[in-house]
Length: 261
Image 1: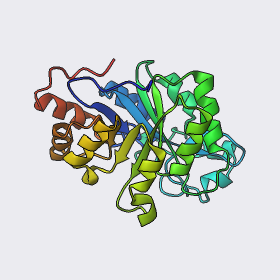
Image 2: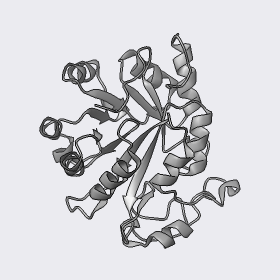
Image 3: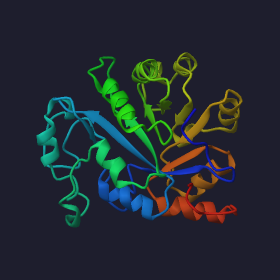
Image 4: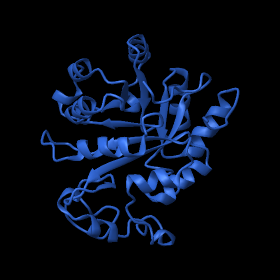
């Protein structure tokens, strides 16, 4: 697969929604800070506006990080872009707006990796997957970006449309039983498994690696959990505290703490 392998001496270190412990999540401020703190890559959430534009935002329903109501998919791009998504974190970030994937790519160093989390919890496909494929082709992102999702159908469609895109299937205990089961992973055969941190066992990692799959873990913030994931030889660790990820790599006696380049 074209998406880079981890450095031989440690997992890739990814900033979950950017450096979201230090800046408002899924904003350019958080993404740029993650680079400054030494992240190898950025994880972000992508949705589709009512008028067909890709936009970066986590929650399907507005109200937690902005003064607005309604579902992202029901609102036009211009309205979404007008919302202040930084003040909830700190008034200093009042000018932060929902970025587009293009703005994210343009704002990062060309070597910084990206994991786009496709937000679609419905079996109904409304064009998000096709828009992601067009975006990857337009910017030729195959060697520095990948797509992940809780929705195996979205990933299946993306793979059918563009086999060059690396895909990762996310799952956690809070999902309904029919999405938690291993049959989706067997049917889809994703390039990477994205389990929640508490689901990672040595057996899961060993079996995934034996099948040629990577293990990308989220959301890992406690130093003890970071060390445990490193000991289990996962391929990527996603966390809100990029500085903790870097410090844990150093404390684990890694040969270098320099970002992957």
